[in-house]
Image 1 (cartoon, rainbow, N blue to C red):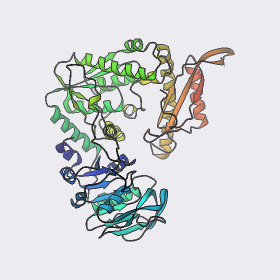
Image 2 (cartoon, helix red, strand yellow):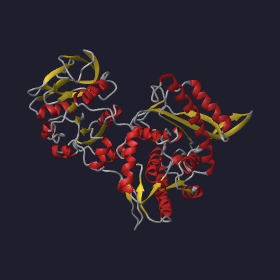
Image 3 (cartoon, rainbow, N blue to C red):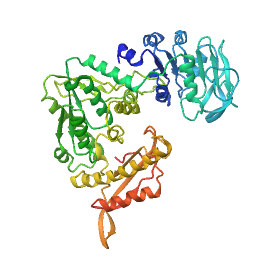
Image 4 (cartoon, rainbow, N blue to C red):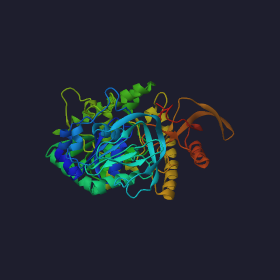
Length: 534
């Protein structure tokens, strides 16, 4: 993102999060954005000069897994503390702040992992309006044992004498614990104190304002050129399509490659939303038979992925070649893609962050410049932007879905018969668990309440089993139901669904889907399993 574009996006209120290899790095940026202040995660080894060029309103130092005394431990340019910008450090961030400013960090006899009771020692702007004793989340073995000159200790725990420290004169603040995680009871209040009380920022970062700014940026970047977009019906590509079309209208053409592996009703939803609701120029490629022939006899899941992925781009570029004057390719790259493609954590440091540009298999002699308007947004922000743009919730809150689609939820060879069975069974699973989640939402007002399902779907294994239906012996297929609770897909647990919900799913599938006589429920967490079966 250019500096001019970032300046408009942030309205001059950018909070930079320096990443020291923290498992919670993205979460810090997310929590700040939740408070309606724009933030970005950047490598910790940026120089003070590079940071100053970003014109940040504040800087946050993340935690990290290394010891500050380890060989090749991630470091910070000491001049960062002389920029005159408020700085807040967490965990490793506190330790590196103390070390670079003349304090002492030691390997302590007893570490702290998990919840701890924080006790305040002195008046504190960071901890203002929080209890004198409160629960915080710790994860450390090293700790600050002597604060730098000019700092005061504002809180401690039973085993950590410097659980929080600050130097108000220089606007430097730090905690050994993690305010960004929900286990720290008053973490959101502390972040609010820092952003609004200490930094003097305003909560002005909204989806409406963001949409307007992105539209302006797209118009400026595109000019009179034509744009093409590979529309899958997924959240990211759908939001990009709505956004770019709002910006440049019929200069955008969407190519929807229907490979036949989508869920029931999804091709029709794409047609309804983009051709009829938004009036977007849409090329709908009916490639179902082409893909079935391509996958005939293929049982290896990686080979399925390879064939589907390579064929997708082949079909897409065939259609692109039929359009005159297209110079730009719009992509649904989002911020975690950018971060994770550079999540290289060598020696605890972050290497240069770069996007997935090189993953697009342009044919010889073909190249489009890329436009990636969502490349600094997290997934739930993309969803919120989609709602703002008028996309239907059925599309915006679409269940996570792999690129190869139902092909990798069919174990073994993909056939038209198996696709028909799985589409019907999967529809029932989604209808029943959509209703279950909706009931929880009505009760709690929280889309991600404790017992809600994060992802759910059906799997069709390549086996048959004996059953009895209507007093007759059957030899039909089983369906596996997979439902998990997760926040980030890195780990997941099987959803503890009420028996009546599971029973309703089973009864409907057996009664309504021809060729199925058994339903089983997958109760394996990730790890050791994965969420998907292939």
